[in-house]
Length: 303
Length: 303
Image (cartoon, rainbow over all chains, first blue to last red):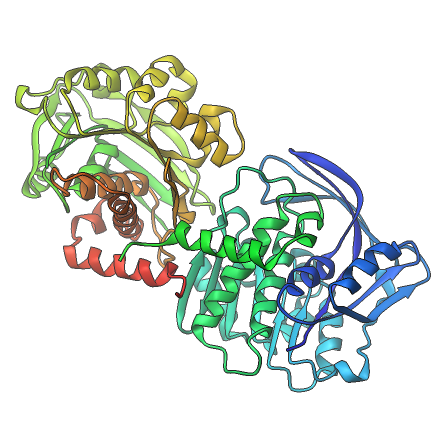
C-alpha cells in the first residue's frame, strides 16, 4: 500500500572522523523515501530550490517514488552543515539555511488524501498538523521530531503527537519531551499522551520499540566500517514504515511490528557505510534479506 | 566446578539521581562472588580491614562462598566514594582510599591452585599476573580492568591480557586500550593480542560478546526502576563466569557462551534495582530463570 512522507530535502555538508563530503543530497524525506521504496510505493511531499540537481530527482523517480507532491520553488534548497566527533551519536550543527523551506506549506494532491500510511518527518509541528488535517482515514500515522521543535513549538507538537499512532524519536528527545529521566517511564508517559507505540532510536546502540504488548530491543548492527551516521534515523523510519505498508490491508500483528523494526535497522545499517545516500541507493532486496538474517544470528538466544 | 575470583572488597558511598547510600558493603569481588554463587562454588581472594562487619562476611559464607583466601588485615577496608549524574553509564569518583588494599599481595591456599575457572577482577595488573603465576592449568581465565590501570600500568596489563581467555571490559576501555575508535576493529585488535573472546560491557545498552565465531549482542533489560548502577558490571561478570563454571567439565560451546552472556545480563539487571548488593543477595534461581525468559521475549526476532 502507498506510504506518504512529508519532510525535508537538503544539501548536506558533513564531516566525520572518517571523512567529509560537501553539498551532497540529503534531508529526512530523501533518506526516508529511498529506504521505504525498497518495500512499497512512496509518495513524497517536500520542497527544493531551482538549484536541486535534476539527476537527483531523476534517481528518486526511477525508484518509483511519486514526486507529484514535490514543489520546485524559486530560491535555494535547504542546506545543513554539520560534523561528528568521536561520538557518532551526536551531530553538531555548524549552519542551517532553511531557504525555500522557510515558506513551505505542504499541499497534498487530491488523490493522495487517502494514503493509508503516513510519515510526518522532522519538520515544524504546525506543518505536520497541516498534513494530518488533509489526510482522510489513514491506517497508520507515524511522526518524528527533534530538540529544536520540542523547545520552540511544544504546544503544536503535543497536539500532533496526540493524534498519531507511532512516535519515532531519539533517546534524548524522549527524555526532553517528558522531563522523565527513566526511558521506560518516559515512553509510557508518551503512550499515555497519544501514540500506541514509541520507537526509540539509540544510534549505535540500536532501537527500543515499546507498546502496550511489551518491549522489543534490536541492537544496531556492529560494523567495522562506519563513515557517516547522517540519515541513519530517517532510513530506519523508511525501512520500518515501508515494511509495514508492504503488508497490504491485513491486520498488522505484533510480529509484523517486530519484523518492521528489524528491517528498518537493517536498512539503516547500510546507510552509515557511506557518505550520504550512496550505499542506500544501490541496496538490493538480497542485501537487505542477508542483513536481516545477520541480525538473527547477532541477537539469537539459544533455545 | 570451582570459580576463583580475586578483586576488591570495599565500603562504598554512592549518590545517584535516585537516592544515596553511605558506607555500604561493595567492591568488585563482593558483587562478583555473590552473583557467581547463584551458579557454582566460589573461592574468594581479597583483603578487608578489621572494620569490615562480621555480618557481611557471614552472609558471603552462608552462600557457600569459600573465604579461605580472604585476609583480614590491620587497618581500614578500601573505601570508594562516588556519584552518578543523569547519565548512569558514567561513575564519577569523589575519593578513593586504598587502605589495606595498598599492601595486598594475593596468596592462594595450596588447594586452590588448580581452580579451573578464574576471574581476575579489576585490580593492579601486577597482582593479576601474580595470581596467574600461582594457578595451574586453568580451563578459563577472564580479566577485567579499568582506565586507571590502562594509564598507569600499560605494560603489566598487556602482559596479563596476553595470557587470558576472555577479556571483560567497558566500551570506553576497549577504545582506550587500543586507540581504535571503531569498537569492532578495536575488539579484533584485542583478540589478536591474546584473549579468544572480548566481552564488552555497555551499561544501559547491554553487552557485545565477540569471538572468532561472530558477535552476540544482548540488550540491557529495560527497567522502570534503576537506583544504583554500581556493581552491575561485576555482577554481570559473576553471572557470566558462574554459569560457565556450572557447565562442569564438558566442552563449552558457542551456545553455552551465549547463555552465559544472557545469565550475566539477567543477574546484573537485578543489581541495579537497589543500592549495593541488597537485591542481588535475595536473588532466587527462579527470579533469574524468569528474567532470562524475559530477555528472550525482549530480543526475539520472529521466525
